[in-house]
Length: 160
Image 1 (cartoon, one colour):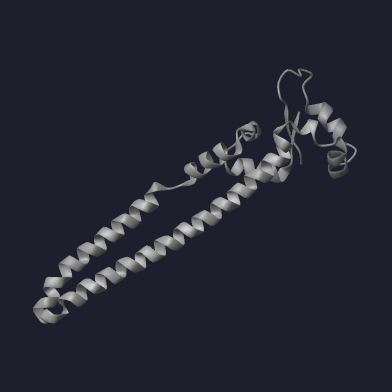
Image 2 (cartoon, rainbow, N blue to C red; image 1 turned 90 degrees about the horizontal axis):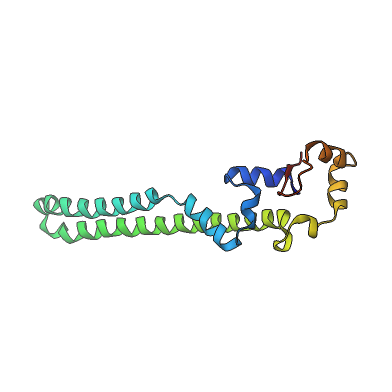
């Protein structure tokens, strides 16, 4: 039997995971979750913005040089500066993504420790007293109502 507490149930729902998925090797599961969350569209959008900035500098230079030929290099420098600013912003976005990933890793560890402490089933590590204390003396009666007598499969119970 696996008892899923409400905060863990919400986390599982957010990432569309079943509790049994947390039996998977933690690093492999973490990388799978991160990969599912990454949006290749974001990186492609930044690459497209870089390309457009370079193109803008190339298009503007001859027009600016018609007004003043000495401003040609300045136009190029301006476009390069914009590219550098875009790169700095991309670095900020990546840093925020890494912070988010670290939060995901921490949440994954907490959820896994709740459902599979030390990598084994809850019942082998956590005392029933923890759940009785937290969910009250009526917990055994509620469990009797929802549990099947077939003990060959892992039974998942979502606590409230």
